[in-house]
Length: 499
Image (cartoon, rainbow, N blue to C red; front, side, top):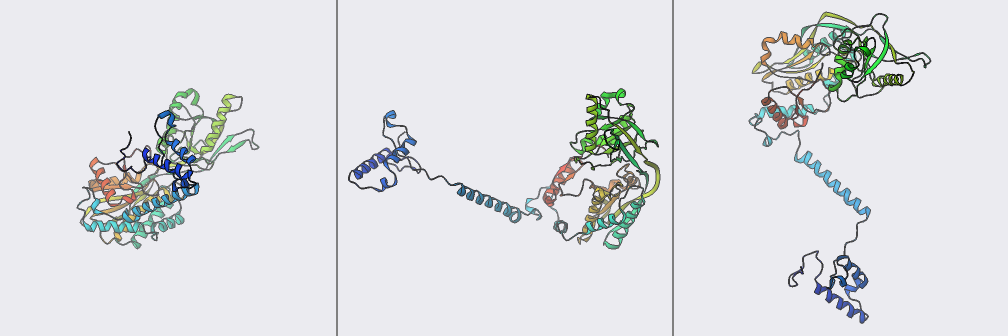
């Protein structure tokens, strides 16, 4: 379609045919007189033809006069492009910072954004939540860190049934009662078993080595039985799953040591080999089990102990690197005349049933109007014997203590009682939790909410909650409206297997 010559040409369209003819006539006249017009000074006749050809094919093929397009702008240099790109990125970053810290600060509670669940929350409650958030983000507050460091430095690990556990519990009660306002600390009795590791060793026979063997570091699994006094000497059969164990059956497993050398995916997916591995292998006549440590770390000295179901055969953990080495030896033996991997395992673990009366540690912030109703914050107090238990789970127990301390200092006592429980014997038999339930069975219905932190103290993400759907929805709304910066609006369901 040819544009209407009486109307102005829209910006960016090629010039009209009549305009092109007039310009060419002017160019031809000026050239013949030896003068240049402004148009010929800008574009030579040769360049003009070249530009026209970019828009339209030769006139001979179309049968009409060609139109001359507008000239294209020069292409930006690489340097100019980089400057424009960096300027754009700086503007975007500035916008993000402005929105994040000026327009919206997640630490600021905005009632205009509240869900139906949170509407009607009293101003006093909102002020208290804001005060607790500010206290929590105060980097100068190192009370919990300092207390945990002092206790672990002084007493070391807190293995269930050990004197170190009892001394640590006494220290917490004394510190809370003497230093924390509005807190009452005490202990409640718990009868516990006592499992002690004793000496343990693992030798992998290697005739090609100078010593004739390789000393493999190991850690006996909690609750494991001991080996006979002279130890157990046998070949090692690696398996990667319980299904493979069952397929090999009694004919291949009996009289050997089973090695569970699985691929680590997630903790929940593989912890069953530690907790049930010895029980399953014993069904097929295995003499002992070795378990690849439940960790993605493949270093030689990365060995993790943990609880196991007590079986008739001993169980120990070795590093992922050593587990892989033993399996390589097994594969070479199957494909050649090399000797299969053979080990000597010695474990002198001991278990004493109901060895002593120990304790749970309890710290209360008494409620102001409904003290009989309880909100329970907790972490377990016992640890394994190979470290000081600062992360597992001293930090979880102490953050509950610190939360109660900050609530007590907020200037507004809670309506319900805030109770901190530091559980005994979580790592093996949960005797602390069972003792608490028995002692408070008459008031369990008064416990309105309970939480435990035992996945490490890192940046908060959210909560794993087991509750009715209405409660879960309320928790999501309260979290998103009041403490979203702590990830409190994130709620998942528990899917954890094993202790």
